[in-house]
Image (cartoon, rainbow, N blue to C red; front, side):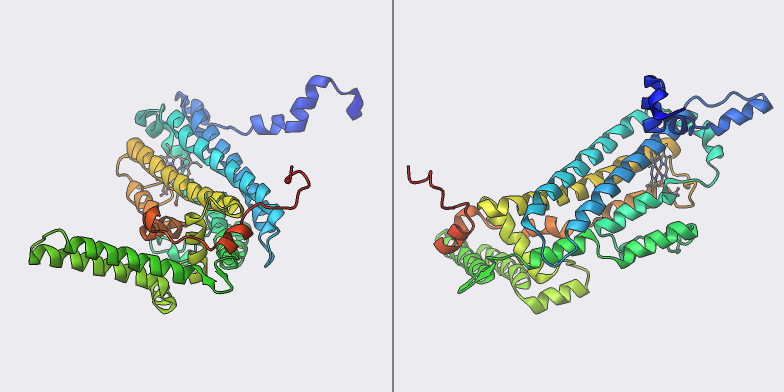
Length: 373
Ligand code: HEM
């Protein structure tokens, strides 16, 4: 039969391969009928749920590939930022949806789960290679991962998936690409203007003014000494940010991951976000933080659900279960440098003004014939 002669109703099923999709939910507890046992009703929800997740992972990876493709060159075309922001926004909405969806799975009670759990054998979400790929593409590095029972996480993965994982690990992650892009931000150093020098001056003025204010407050010697020490601590904290060598040492100690230049630009963008050319970069950094936050929320919601379903039992993948998952919550954060930057914000009133020349360069001024009217 040619495509034309087909019933219109079949077109829908065919286009979506529904026959394949809808026949892929086999409850293993159904097989237990042969032994006269009732199949588990909730096993259907459990299977379907994981499949829905894998489909969403597939879509997220599809978006990631496109985003990463736009960042692969040393010069990112400005016109690519719009689609990148749209796609990151889409990933954020998908992640928000999958976090919320867990509520549906929690309508299954722990007894129902235990009734079919044996049918999972050693199957576990831990083996989701798409989830691993997503973590890697976003920027989670092998060395930063929690060791899984003292083994590499992909040790038992099949050869094909392992090759995919290793290839992704050997390529630049979105984190590296964004860091490189940030490091090339114009305006941070422009002629005799350097953001770092002007920010450092503003920070020191802020501390000097605070000290001068405290001197007028009639504090006794002990109170004054406590305040002075706090101010000195504050100065030191900022100095470690301004000093490239100190930053390198902190990278070595695992306290920072982002490059020195990348951090400067991220702070610059976040402070001067209302300058027209910085709107899009600021939006992009915010979306990356949203993604990191939503992944952490998912890890937390999933860990709580695991605790509700199986208490402190070990996972079918062989981990300690709830305990392991709670540790990943902290350890597997990726963009936490962007969050840590807020430590270095100062009140707006103390913020250095941008030179007029730089402000003009960052505006949307153009020679429109309508402007003069
Ligand atoms: C009743 C529901 C669920 C239970 C009891 C459960 C249990 C677990 C446990 C115990 C682990 C730790 C690894 C192990 O030892 O097995 C784990 C990991 C994982 N699960 Fe679930 N899970 C549930 C639902 C889901 C769903 C719906 C998904 C969606 C795909 C999912 C995805 C994952 C992923 C990706 C991991 C790896 C996390 C990591 O290593 O950071 N799980 N799960």
